[in-house]
Image 1: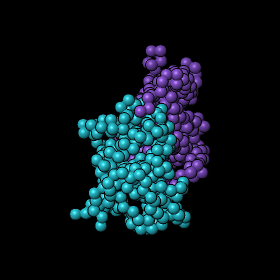
Image 2: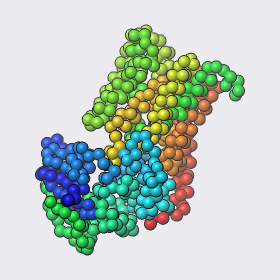
Image 3: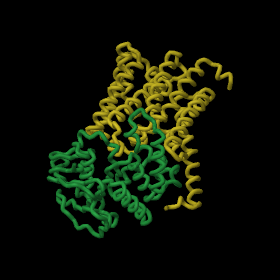
Image 4: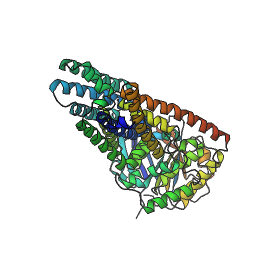
Length: 238
Length: 278
C-alpha cells in the first residue's frame, strides 16, 4: 500500500484579494523527507506553508494533510508548526516550560490535564532541544537560538509527523544552528518526520534537504540540492 | 482599623472591591498578552449604554449592562474575525456606547450622582444583594479562567500556532471576550465602568516587571489587585477620597514600585554572567 504524503498541494492557487500570490502550485512531502522552500522576501513562502497547515484557505485547488483535505483534517497533533520567532514574542513573561506546554493544548482539548506520559514527553523534548538549564526562565530573556529551540520543542511535544518551520535560523547564532541541524537530521532520518523548511538562507538546510524549491512569480521552481549526503527516504510515489 | 472593618458599608465595599480587583487581573493577563488592553475600557463604554437604557425603562442596571456587553462581545468577535476590528470601528462602537448611555440616562431623569456612581463606582453604597451579584459574576469568571487556563495561555501566546495544534481558537477568543464583558459588569458597582478596566491592566503591567512566568504574573497581579483594593478603600475612608480612583491610583503606585524593582533586578542581572548559550 502506498504511503500518503504528509503534505500535498494539488494545483493550488491563492491570492490576497485580487492579487495572486501562488498559481497552480503542486508539491508532495513524504514522511522522512526534508523539503526546503526558498525565495525572496514577499515571494509567498510563508503563504504557501500557511495554506498547507490550514491558516489560509486556497482559492482553487486541493491541499491534503496525510491524505485528508486540510478543511476536514482533525489529527492536528500530527502537525508541528514553528512560526517566525517575531510572531511568538510575548508581552508578558512566559517561561520556556509554559511555552512548551502550550503545544499540548490542542491535543488535550479544553478540559483535560496533562498526564504522566505528556509530562514524560515534555521532559524528552526539553532534553533533546537542550533546554534543561533554561526551562524556568522567561523566553524573552533568552538568546535568539534558545528562543527558537523552545518554539521547536513546543512543536515537537505532540510527536508530530509533519514539522513546518518558518525561517528558523533568523537571528540565531552558529552554535544554535548546529543544534537545530542535528535535531532536524535526527527527526528526518530516525523518526521519519516530514519537514517543510522555509528559509532565505540555504546554509540552514544545506546537506539536509531532499528537495529544494524556489517560490518565484507565484510558481514553484526546482532548485539544485547542494551537499545532500543522505539517501532519499524510502517511500512509494504514485 | 478594627473600627473601620466593623462598619457594615465598609465590609460590603471590601468584599466587592477585593473580589473584583483580584479576579480582574486574571482576565487582564490574557487581554494584555493578546494586545487587546483597551477591550475592557470599550466594554465599559458599551455597558453604560445598557445601564442608561435600564434607567429609562425601569429595569435593573446590572441586567442592562450585561445584555449590552454580551451583544458587544459578539459584535467585537465578528469584527475581529472579519479583520474589521481596526481602531476606527472599535472607536465607533465604544464611543457610540457612552453617548447612548448618557442620552438614555438624561432622558430617564437620573441624577448626575447616580450616573457617576456607575461610571466611577460607589462601593460604599452597596447592598448585600449587589455584593452577592458582584461575587457571583466574579466566581463565574474565575471558574472559566481556571478551567480553560491551558488553552487560554496557548491563544494568548501564539494564536496561529494554537490553531495549528487543534485548539478551537474561535470559541476561546469569543469566550475570552465574554469573560471581559462579565468582568466589566461585575466591577460596575465596585469601582465603576470606566475604572474596572484599569484593574485588568495595571496590576498585570506591574506584575510583569518582576515575574518570571505567566503563572507568576497572574498570581502577583491578583495579589496587587486585591491589595490595592484594601489599601485604596482605607485611603478613601481616612482621606475622604473617592474609592474607585483611590484603588486605581494605589495600583499605579504598585506599578511604579515594581518598575523600579524590575529595573534594578535587570541591571543586577546584566552584571552577572548571562544564561549560557549552549
